[in-house]
Figure 1: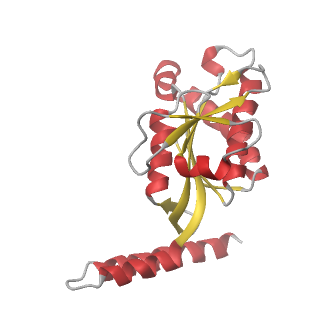
Figure 2: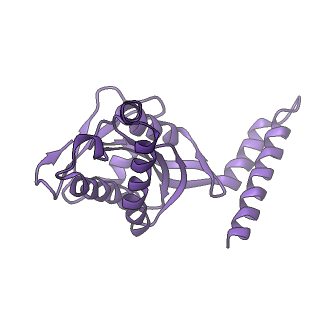
Figure 3: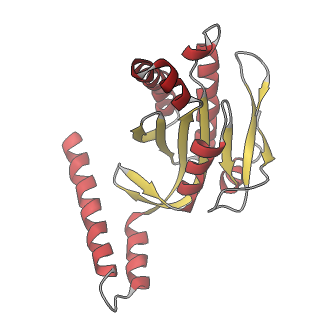
Length: 217
């Protein structure tokens, strides 16, 4: 299976590189080439970006071993939840995950369950041992290149929401995700004043943490 994945990813990347090279030629029909690229790689996905709140500060304060411990614990706790909700973990970079889901409802439920799992894990631990999660979600048409990466406006918006805007415990979503998940049980949405570039609306998810029974933004 790993060999097949490598072949598929290499073939996808090779095809995209050749089309981009063709697009760069003088007089190229960019519209036709763009249509070919979207026909080959365009798919509808819900994309998730995660980040750990205050991570850089804690690394500076507690050192690299603490960094490795926190990364390992976050993967141990969160990857099984992602798999249970049919997510594909495409990339881990430092303290951040890039995950894609076919179903936006499952992505949102996964986000809530991840926060609940960490709330239970953090209970009673000193602040430096807690794993505090930030999540951003986007949904829509994007370019998926094998099992390595995705590109698109919703990808960019989700990245900014999860890695730049969200605070500990927060799940921030684009308007497209909110539209897909409107009416989800136990969930409410509060619109953000300034959505990131790439989307016209963004929302903060209101949900219940089982560990404390309190509503978290």
